[in-house]
Length: 436
Image (cartoon, rainbow, N blue to C red; front, side):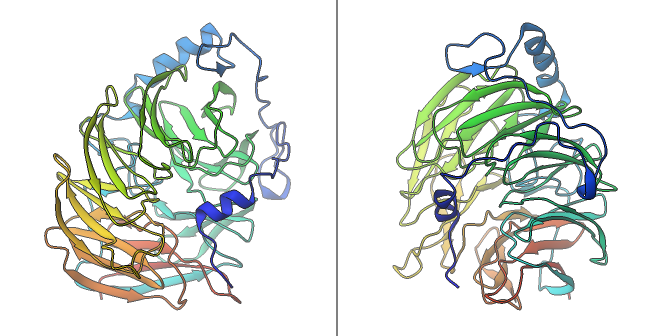
């Protein structure tokens, strides 16, 4: 079976409409309570940049939430209220850095694996002793992190998004909407129709922020599922938003720019034109936004105003999000540059964009992860650990499937969790890798 890239998949669903979810109840996939009914798209005054659904009371409440501790700080990639690897790229800034944990360093072996009924395309997350992920067998899974035993499952039209687990709730963008489930039981708390949600949600300050393939960015009350604001950007959003302090950062896909939005209102604060499509999810660390383009640029812009700081030009295409740790940006390229001799995993100085090292691997469109002095990357049927300082390959684990490993490595307490694409006849598999 020919593997479809994320871009190819998104294009095939461009004409697909979202089935209505407003007012959904649990049934077999969890929960008996009434689902949240979204506000009308015409509710509230239209702002100059197109944001709708925002009343004055909504805006005041959102501003209060956007300035609390939930948004994290711009100095970090460390967020005190988060533990483990609870969302895409570990934290709200999409830093891809796990500062308080290490994974396998000198080698890796499978402590356990769990096979699903179809491909695993979205990232695996792990927190509170549980591993959460979606599969194309239309299921959201929760597994015991230590044993791989199934804790609960929910029937859902899963796409290729990562769950976000915050304050005992799992927020998950399915093929037709945004859902909230009790993290311990899988019981549905609410559901909101959004259209085809291709991107992973970020949660902070009691608000869920999510973009979708129909071109909307939303702020949703994390407790009730009610829309706070909704901003139509007019193009297809293909990157996962980052939240730092009171600002949302997002790449705009085929239009080719990076935007900063006011987290309280959805108003555009600045936009930066890029050289190529921005399918990469931005990483925001120490006041700088890092992103990649499909035309081979890895770039940095000032988080306060979008001013360009530097551009590193590579013979590659960047779809995955860069990881940023200890003054270095780690970026993994895609789309066949191995055959042309391109160096697909690069370590670049975060201050000026000069490259420290690059290694050639057969890659997929998966974001790297940094923990301790190891950067973890995935390829076709392989998970690898590299020395962050030199790029030396420390170990390589070969999965049972000679297909792309399609989820970002999640590192928690010495264990690396990752999901695979599967084979032509068998579903994907989640692995827990530990030091031998």
